[in-house]
Image (cartoon, rainbow, N blue to C red; front, side, top):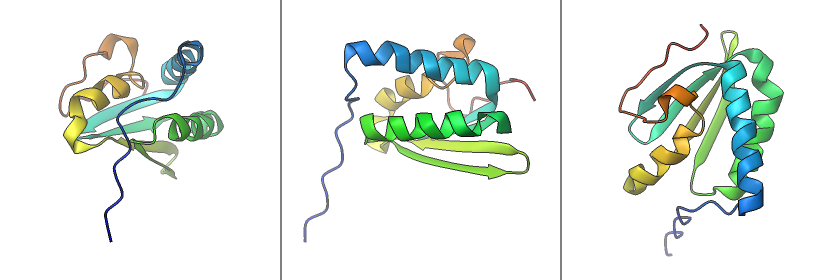
Length: 119
């Protein structure tokens, strides 16, 4: 039995869809992101509970266009957590994609970064 081929590191959104999607993610980030931390090829995000429905919708949309990313969302202790994991062999590409989920001032993602977002 052969192992499944990994999904290519490429978003399937067309140019007309990319702008509105990124704007939606930025709006969610600005309104509800509390903190984040990058650990290897996984970005850990913490959101205000008010973001639950919108975040779930965005995660489903992102799963369909970025099959190479793994999304794990759950609630815990009054917050909503989202882990996004990219393929270890494509860290440079996934870091750019991760930056879409971070505050504007932090477009350069570094290892073990953590923001002082609304706590």
